[in-house]
Length: 154
Image 1 (cartoon, helix red, strand yellow):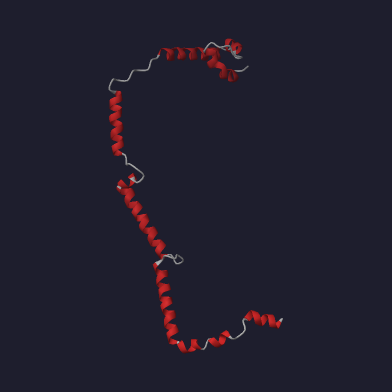
Image 2 (cartoon, rainbow, N blue to C red):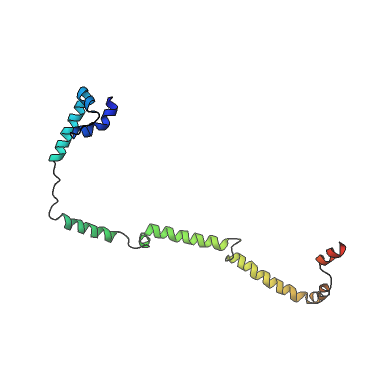
């Protein structure tokens, strides 16, 4: 076994477990030194004790949490309390409405609605001016349709 493969078992070896790398560690000075270093580290970790928090730790933590909650915007639209976001959102909203109303193919566009109104008024005025001409269109109803003419020709 080589050192690279034995390194996978060094921690278990340091804990005192029997591993396939046991023979290599006993014959290799580098691996033996590494196992000794791991044992020293594990011994130090066993002696170490976590410090106890101060008696007022929980109270100070609760106070800081309350302060942070008061600073943080509440709710879904809480971010609107920040002026930069509110102004940006308002600008996007105005730009979107302006683009929608100016769209040439939108049904809600003011320019298109004006064209439709002007078109309808122009049609009515045309009917009034050409009333005599349109009155004689009843004669056209008596003519055969183009489909009927094609059938006769075939």
